[in-house]
Amino acid sequence: MAEFLLETERLIIRNWREQDRNLFHIINSDEQVMAFFPFKRSRQQSDEMMNRIQSSISSNGYGFTALELKATNEPIGFCGLADATAEDPQFKELIEIGWRLAPKFWGKGYATEAAKRLLEFGFEELGLSEVVSFAVHNNHRSTSVMERIGMQRRPEQDFDHPGVPDTHPHLKRHVVYVAKRDE
Image 1 (cartoon, rainbow, N blue to C red):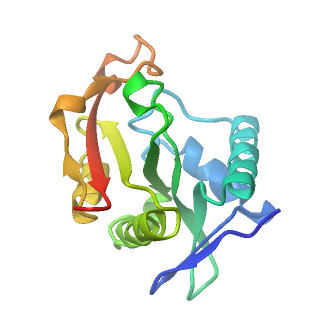
Image 2 (image 1 turned 120 degrees about the vertical axis):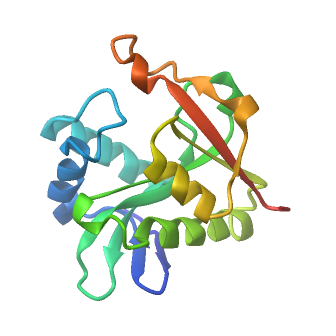
């Protein structure tokens, strides 16, 4: 498996390793982390998702990558660039940026630090002209990160996420932010 590797002042951005599976499951099954998603993932679902992400990183050279603290070598969550997954036609062929951290690492600027580095990588190394991000309309933690990394709100692109079941109407409406290389 290819080892994707970037660094920031405090973080290593890399592909997932087998020893990260427990953290990956914890993140994807945690009540706080998954508050803006219609379901939490079982261990099997988390393992399957991690396998898909590892494979995508190996074949594309980017994806939802693991974040590791340089000081302790402890994995803390993920951040990455990936093919947009909103299932909305306006995002076809676009790259999104997203993140999830274990709650004990919230509020320390790690998502912002990693996302800034990944945007730089996307624009400078991958030659992307635009990166999108979207979140449930009242997910202020995520939209605040989008704003801190310089993304601009695009209210005309807000949408009801087709992948969110009607049983969760409070999670359907998503807001859209965009970063452009030339802005």
